[in-house]
Length: 50
Image 1 (cartoon, rainbow, N blue to C red):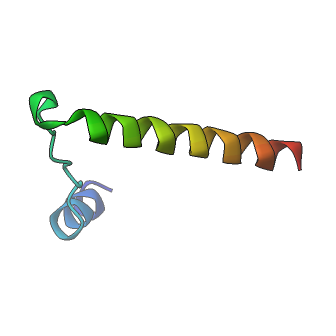
Image 2: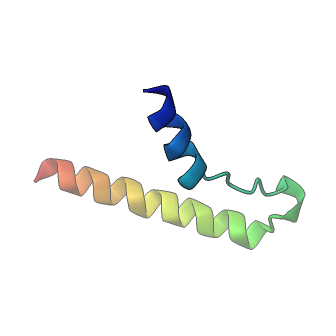
């Protein structure tokens, strides 16, 4: 089991996301993020209603 785990981690390493600095985010990007979050929330609610 340990050998399989090491092979998987060697060929499929965990993806590390780049952390954006908060100071680099403009107010326009923050507004866009709020719109995206609202759209995703509405889509999930619509999907749950069926």
